[in-house]
Image: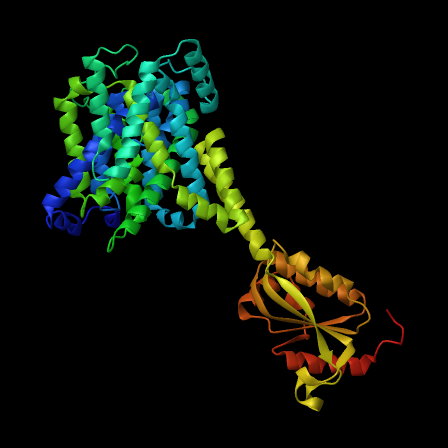
Length: 552
């Protein structure tokens, strides 16, 4: 547990360049404010839930997390998971799920599960990000069109119904605000990347809605002037059993997105390296605390983390400053924030979804190999149509299957000519005439369940020889299936009167071969080198004599 807690070095780093960290934190807070409001509204618990999450989870994850540059809070990916939970269990169910997810994340940290993030293939991550971006964008369609969000669990169906309602009664004010905010953010980011155009666009849209009294620009609504007192009244104790599966999904998503974000942050800097297990611990603490103040489950945010790094942050002080600035806004500016049009927040999230998609990275991934393209597209489609965690599982399973297939095809078996006389006669076994009564096979690559029987199938077709020599020195991997396939081949040849000799068995493979009885099948016919095996084959041939002429 001591390795998961903050250290003196963490606090010492905050004093190195506090001015730069304070400015970076202020910049991130300006960017995070509309996102926190938007994701809170999108989750179904309201803008105040998004702000509470950004303040509480943002501060605790910054203090206890495993990355000095990570910024946490409500995110689009988490919102996608929460919407169906809100629909089925209500706000209390969501907050209970957050607590359970926090406990699960703490357990993952103690079990040191963070290291396994490195095994998630890049196409799965890219496909997941693309799918999340599509879901976030589609979720904003009702607010962007100024219609009440239709009922339904499928984001595609909800979007279609919202469009149908808009066609019946168009609300061009909401649409104009949403598209205007999105356009300002996207074009402004190209013109002046350092300027927080999200807050500029939201302020402009709010001012326009208030000054011109625009119809159809529904505001967020009243916000509490401060964080609520900690409470456990939301606990759904009677539904804990049914909430465990959603909690697992939330915890898995929080772990995946947080560790991915920390990896991105490491790549954007020099000399920074996150602790994955401690990052899980920090996210667990954050998700335990956020629901107590009415916040939704949180995770690290890649976009806000990137802004933090680009703004010059060097320690945890920047992320802590971001949370403190948002807390001041909650206490001092709630009446102003409550007047922000929902359509403006929809525009912010639409622009965020567009910026999540790295077109260059997607093109490179699709062009790399056909397998990578299949995994990326399948994960993206599954993310859009199915549950997010299920989409990642599908992507991992397909990626694993394709990887195994790629490895399995590397295994091969080649027949080589055996000398007509033993090496003792001719000296160099590679330069003597071949013997038609001895077949030598060189097995190369992995001999495991994905392709062992395919590789050894050629042995079942051997005919017209007295002896088969198996050269196994180039077998790189062998599992029980490969060892069993080898044993079956040896026994099959033996029943047909063909002696099988083996040479070059690696020490690492002996235990596997012994466990299935393959070494017993090769007893007294196993040799260290090919020359020894060849000499033994000629000796056997001398005892039994060659096959009669014309024998097949």
